[in-house]
Length: 338
Image (cartoon, rainbow, N blue to C red; front, side, top):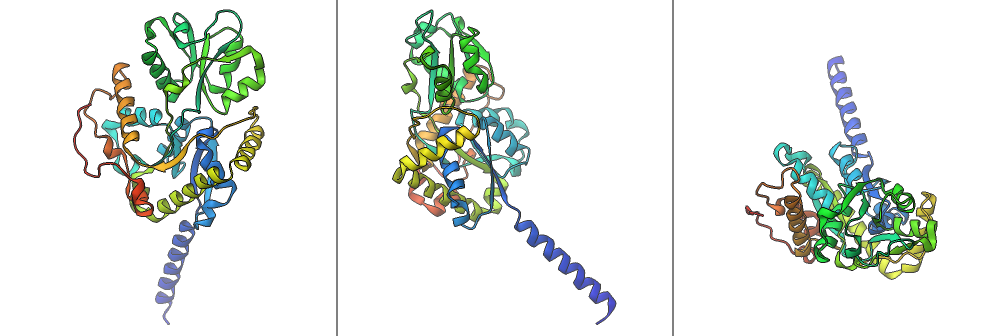
């Protein structure tokens, strides 16, 4: 065998090895320290990704906004995010969207009224209802679901938002800001609600009205991942399906797991109740996205004044291949004037 042929075969061998090693790199998934993201924790701790031959490196952020930013930056392959953060991102990036890097929705994991709360103090002014907060200051994390959530409350309870000051604070600082009198109420989510209650006890009370909002929670990826690696997306969705089944069938054990995990992250609290976790893509999610867009328009967010086709934000094929009856959205894209 000639030297030239040997060198060619050696180069081909190195290329093959390089391709094989690339395929073996773990997928990266960014979850959130959020009770609504319980399926991610359950899937990770119970080796459900490995069950479906996936090597997944799971990390957890404080908000879905951070996880979405990691996906945009190419640091992760999958992320968990609220519809609000996803919608705002879509609107602001509409003009310079690269199709291969475009975030798309693989599935919704949640349909629950138990995840979000408004807390106030039990001292001083009595803020029993949302309308009692007129003229006050509301602490929340801007750019997350909390900002949209407050709008839902204000519309439902007919609060004059011009008489409300919104104070943008990190989630971990909201409780202290409330106790120090910097804000009159805070919009928070689990596990932080229970964390603040554990920390400040009877000094806190929940404002009536949280039931008016039903939380969703989105599993997203890039368009390129959905189209070029559909099998991995399908396997990931199957793992999430198993995790949700485990939450329903072994609730007590799962909630003990969750409590232990959040305490390891220095988040206090107990007596967590799981929300209604479901894997689907259906009309209720489309309705939620439309309402997010309407809110963005009313508040003059960048990009909200353009015609938008929300069905283009979905990549339903992986879920349709796994469980077709869970996909109940229009498959034909059409121009929509919001």
